[in-house]
Image 1: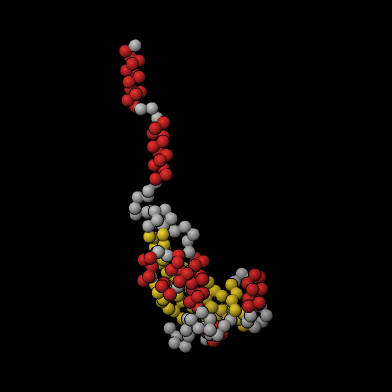
Image 2: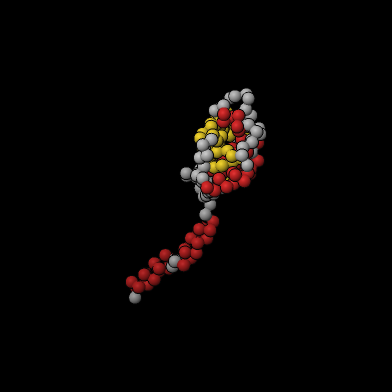
Length: 182
Ligand SMILES: [Zn+2]
């Protein structure tokens, strides 16, 4: 890790010009929005991230600052099937192009395939890590196969009803017996 660069106040221009790389590990507990999406066992979960700066030619013939960001964590979430805790692998890998102003970023973000952000001398890379991981979260986290049996109280009620509609097997047997004696 390059000591010149801090993930929370990153000079994008200097980072890209130096083709610098920044790696880090943070506790999930510093990311409040990710914590809201996870269950109580998440406090010691780690978030790994890596950023790579680069200058690339832009369409105007100049050079634009780019940062490629990768982040990864294993987030304990609530399984939507059994409501137990399930660890979901969440990761992102995306490149961002930086432009001078917010207006330019909005305009270019709509018209280009890549994500466009506003350049800053104090860019909060950790906030971007959190944004990206939030977008990568599974909509319906589930165990591949749930460790606890799933409670099907609604299905149980249906099952009892169906059983009640069926004729009592002993009554049927009684009728058959009656038939033979007649
Ligand atoms: Zn489950």
